[in-house]
Length: 305
Image (tube, rainbow, N blue to C red; front, top):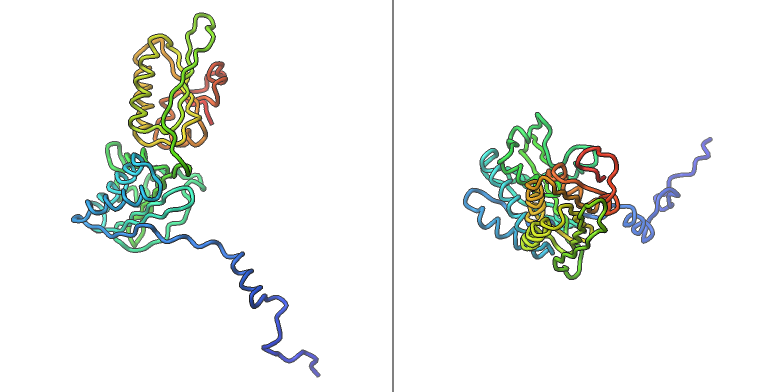
């Protein structure tokens, strides 16, 4: 004779949580839903102007400074142009406003696709397609091409190709909330050692186009009296592509003087940005002012990180 208890659908399964308690458990265990895109727009050859205007407006509304919003417009325009030239002749742009960054996705055929992988997490350079990658073959990658510019401007770039088309995902870090500090430079001469004339320039605020011009002028002027400069950028709150370009120009001026030298001190975030933009190898980087004054044994120009 069987002694099994007959099945009763009203009997509560001890392994199952029902009612309000179950709903609370489900809410706490399920991952948070991703917000809808703040921009979802189709494009073709006749609508690129409208696309650029929409991208800029939404980037600024999301809290991106004007100069950085223009960087996003340039990147999206280049990707859309590539979609028209090398893809299906039309496409779709979506932008998500996430907690600390904007994520832009450009699909070359307008078909929805979910790109949620983190290209930096598995050791892949997020800014450079691997040789032989379908997306790299479809959207050629070379100096002077739009993808080279995007690598310079975006914080990350991931390309992926498949039967449904080529998909590009870019991210742009948002500035901290609150008032945006103005760019400010201060200088401090270091005690002379063995006749060496060294100066620490400390920058704070936002490094954009106007700030970059000020930085270039100040460095050019200070090199006349202090051929060894330490540029402390740890106080920067934000920077855009024009600001990054000013560092390259500053280094160019220093390189014109055979006795001049420049060391850049920054944060990990700034060093990642310099590496992504291909500038790290052009600059001497140090982990702090003391390390810049007394550098370790020379192991290459990029000493930070």
